[in-house]
Image 1 (spheres, rainbow, N blue to C red):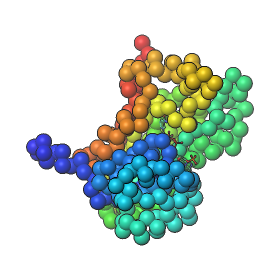
Image 2 (tube, rainbow, N blue to C red):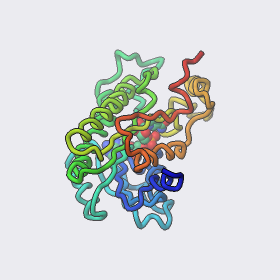
Image 3 (spheres, rainbow, N blue to C red):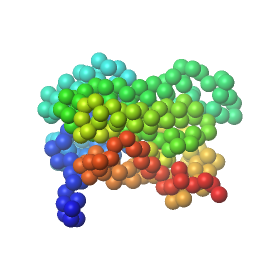
Length: 277
Ligand SMILES: NC(=O)c1ccc[n+]([C@@H]2O[C@H](COP(=O)([O-])OP(=O)(O)OC[C@H]3O[C@@H](n4cnc5c(N)ncnc54)[C@H](OP(=O)(O)O)[C@@H]3O)[C@@H](O)[C@H]2O)c1
């Protein structure tokens, strides 16, 4: 394969891709890039207010994008969204599971021990990250199984390789997402079609609403001790920027990675490779 042929495999033109959590920081960045790369994009989120700004950001490409209400924890709402998406775009070729997150109530701290973390907060985090990935795979993956072709990209976390302190539910839930990614990759390939691929990315630290309260002091904006420690343990010495994800996202969603399934790719500036010594 020559370079021109290879480059031509990085192509999503005409593919319809659903992005859950599509109005969030990382999901929104991915949705805008997908439109730029020629895909039709279904932005799915439970709150569509920020979608208008995203569509404006997409400029001329916005004609190939639309926002759909959907709760990743509610099968009926996902099925309704799938119906509306296929009505609009005709088919579903890909799914990016970008809905997820953590919450302060499920985080240990100087005044809150692990033993006192409320179970409803722990369950909320498990549900959003793990079930919020499994349920969209059931609903949108079914279309791929019927077509015999499709691609799913889950969003795990560096927590999956070694858990971070203070966030037990988030770490365990993301480890579940990575494990489920491998499981579903095998299941789809063996039971339905080797042309259905399932992979994940594992971002390191990107300053967003889910972790800002842990990494920066809300009053001064300066790094907390934890934020500083992360930078010290990141060989590239910085937090990630949402656009740092895009190269791997395009690779994993496009035919450029046609023989890649069941992998979890860290995008973390070397954090997961560094022993700290
Ligand atoms: N930021 C990081 O450093 C980092 C690192 C590793 C992994 N990740 C993962 O990357 C993904 C995106 O994170 P992000 O930083 O972009 O967070 P974000 O900005 O909070 O985006 C998450 C989006 O998911 C939506 N959402 C939450 N619950 C939902 C539900 N039940 N149904 C549908 N949508 C729902 C949120 O809506 P609301 O605004 O209404 O809650 C939000 O729009 C998450 O899985 C996160 O765990 C992030």
